[in-house]
Image 1 (cartoon, rainbow, N blue to C red):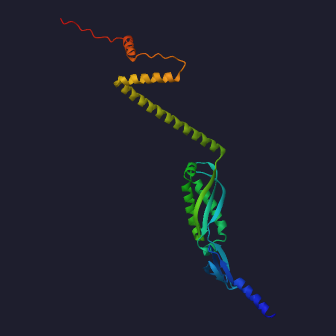
Image 2: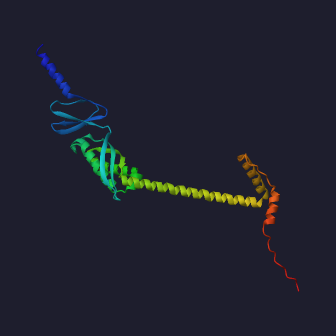
Length: 259
């Protein structure tokens, strides 16, 4: 009985060292005596103790927060930019063999690429066309990390820190733009109102009854607004007669008698 116990312990230790379980999102790179033989997983993996060594690799997307980077744009504006990079391992063997620490390498490459791309663009382009900057950074990173078995899926600029002087200048520019739009809208409204009044004057001059109806409507509005004032309406025909008497008479040309 005493001789069986050590054998059982050895078998348990052997199974513990030989059997490995990989999750669905994991892969195992198998080294046998220092050489890569295969990439296995997911599921149950059987290794040869002492001879085989397995390195786990996750295939899930990794979120990399790129810290603030001091950037001088193409138009000589000093800003601070940070971003977030989403990438994943697509080739576990390359991620282990081609680079010592792909997390650190990708982080450093993202920082330098962010500075170079933002430094080659003007501030207005960075603020107004973030999608183009994101796509450009993502393309460069994906090309550089392809040899490491890394796929950069997305890059997003998170925050752009502008100097206080630039913020005040942009606020003044935005205020001036709003004032300009307000003046243009006001001028267009006055132009449309003048056009409508001119058309109304033409209609009234062509139809004198319309002027009389307008006169009666104005009298009704005045009576409704002011209750303490007594309004005595004057007949419209009498007003026309008075206007004709007070207006200067046209001089008629004197015809010479025929000799």
